[in-house]
Amino acid sequence: MFRSCLLAGFLGAWTVGSIGGCCGPGAPPAEKFFDRFTVENTLKGFVYAVDTYQWDYAYESLSSGSREAYSQLKLEVAVRFLSAPGGVPLFDLISNALERRAPAEESGDLARVLVITKARDENGTLVHYEVYLYFVREAVGTRWEWKFDFQATANGLPSGLVEAS
Image 1 (cartoon, rainbow, N blue to C red):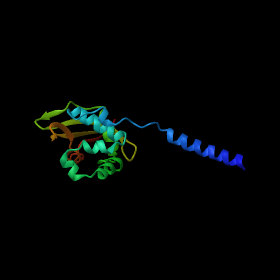
Image 2 (cartoon, rainbow, N blue to C red):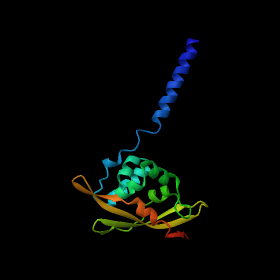
Image 3 (cartoon, rainbow, N blue to C red):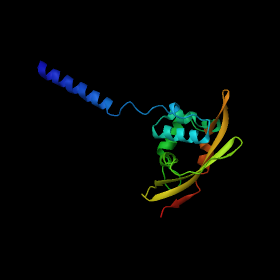
Image 4 (cartoon, rainbow, N blue to C red):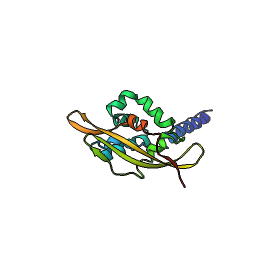
């Protein structure tokens, strides 16, 4: 009896320990690597945060107008579960945004980056998607940071879907 209880306790502790340690310590925090002083760093940090499910950092990267339009939960649900026209998941569009992009076009406190990304639509067809990602420079305390204008970017999504050859 004692032996079977000891064995059950050992197996239970081993199972919990192996499940808890299987995924490692997790991804390092985005703020460790990315500031928001350039459009490129803001984009890289946002993509990293989305890829690693660091929704606090992703939400902090949004422009004030986008934060008014979207709560953090709404942002996460939109990115994880919604699709752009053509059935391309928003998560895939964002996750692939760093592969092929043009240099940022800046004009004062506004900027945009043309991104050509690829993803599979609901039919499994590989599509290339051209979309502008919009950014706004905003004061944060005593410094200026570039913020991702998710709302303006989402409004521009219907254009640019082309089937890959």
